[in-house]
Image (cartoon, rainbow, N blue to C red; front, side, top):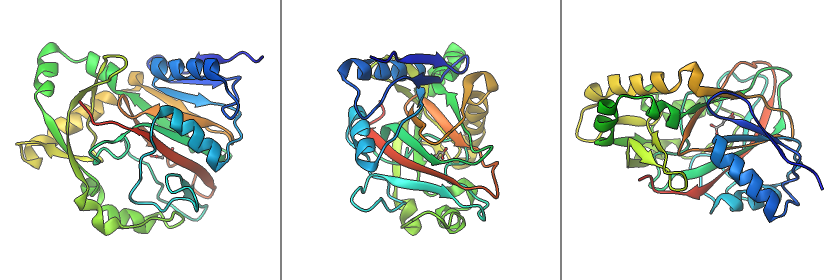
Length: 280
Ligand code: SIN
């Protein structure tokens, strides 16, 4: 019987999990992996060999699969899609601090990202801890944020619009960029995580266009400050990928940012989101 090790990779969040085969794990091994996820918010599980069905099975441990509206899924596996950047491309998918698909009414609790091919160097992913960021605020700021709802849009309005973004990520099977503005949701700016009772800031420059009842101009400075605050170095960790790494992150409690520092090299990942959850 192998021993599962869970090793933190930074002061605030993130851990590396070794010694488990996700295809064959029993309930006791799953309990260890799940506890690591609850404790560390981001877990990089090393040394996996996952086919599409294996990935669906692991995702099911975290909940029902979520549909991603803007990339065509794999044949036979509509909830899985490939995140690819070819050597000739400049723009990447997932750059910029965000939590996944916050413009949906019930965004995914977890994202599973599996590395198939990684560049010789670079291509890491950054994560930031939205619970630690919330906890470090003053009581007055917490009170004020607690009274706000955010409007979240898929339109990528702060970076030229989704159609432009799609035109620049040619290797991926992107779809329906022109419908992006129809995906909009209103969520609390401070959300509470069911299992842990923790409160987390839920806001990004990528998707939050404004606070409900305020204009974009009124909202922008605070949105920008919240993201600056939440991404302070002491609230972050960095996952270095190698083929066979499956990283699972908690979209309720972290933002992520795919670093685009590997031009001329190929990176090929596979993504699944799970556990649709209405933020409260
Ligand atoms: C994403 O935002 O889902 C992609 C993250 C990555 O490729 O590192």
